Image (cartoon, rainbow, N blue to C red; front, side, top):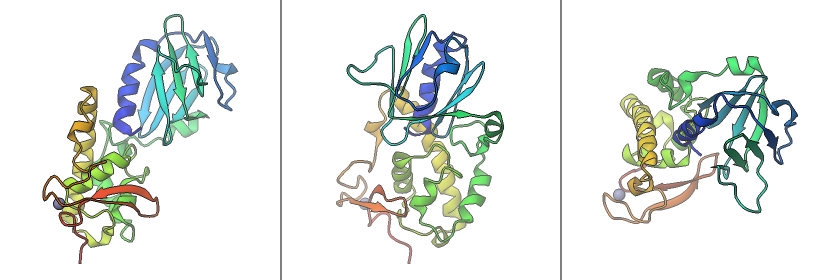
Length: 243
Ligand SMILES: [Zn+2]
């Protein structure tokens, strides 16, 4: 799940805020005892982290690659990693990592790096990208220390919209290209959120899981790129490698 999806989840959890956990269970290695019967006070998202604040501690949930959730609709025959039962309703989290977040680590969260945050800073991201000149742009976009919340969908779509080859090195891009890429990543993430809220995100995909380039109709390249080896969908004609 990418940043915009976490924001939607955060909104969906609002009805539970201020409610007491009746029962906490699940297969997580995290000791669930402490949050039993405690008050769920606040929910936040930072990048791909979901932060569940209880009156005694904070849980950090990371959905990894295949994590999912259900609200008032548990999956049959499937043990959730974490299940929270309230007087009215329940939340089930699957295939995710759950950790207790200590107060000091929480204070270190830099909201200006969260692609969905009001505090997001594009100039700061531009500077950080430029410090990774030797890296491929496909890796830098997925760097959660620069673009917290950006995942593979946003990466592929943004590189296509900016006509940048995923294997281009940052040092091969002009300052104007880097600036435009950062701005596009922010605006696309916000757009992703709006589309997803209307259940129409996939309809707007240009290259993600597509076979042909919508611009030139040539066959797209589908390749695992960069040191992160994540799948890239791109048009090598419209997104040529810099010379
Ligand atoms: Zn093309």
